[in-house]
Length: 69
Image (cartoon, rainbow, N blue to C red):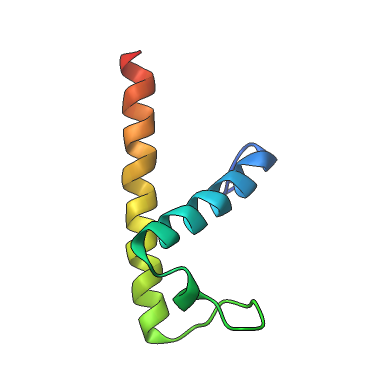
């Protein structure tokens, strides 16, 4: 079974959503090293979980709105 987005454009959209949510939460800068790579500290794993949780909530809200329209 293939895991991941079915649409290749979805990956880009999800990465953009992650950045937007991280900025809204005020943690975007904390998730990146100055050289642009993601860090793997315990704090960033925690922050990544919070960002991922918010992404999931937002995706569910979008899906619910589409179902009701």
